[in-house]
Amino acid sequence: MTHYSSTSARLSTAQVDAVVVVRVVVVVVVGSAP
Image 1 (cartoon, one colour):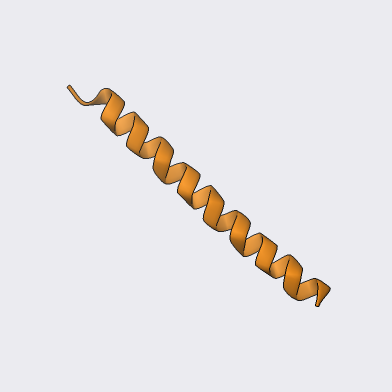
Image 2 (cartoon, one colour):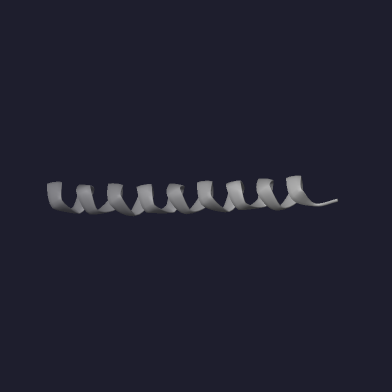
């Protein structure tokens, strides 16, 4: 169970990182748009 929980936590962290990266890219693109 511990290994499974650790894997789930890693997957969740990866998803959060992806969301943060997407938000940053959107903010940069919108901010640089004329």
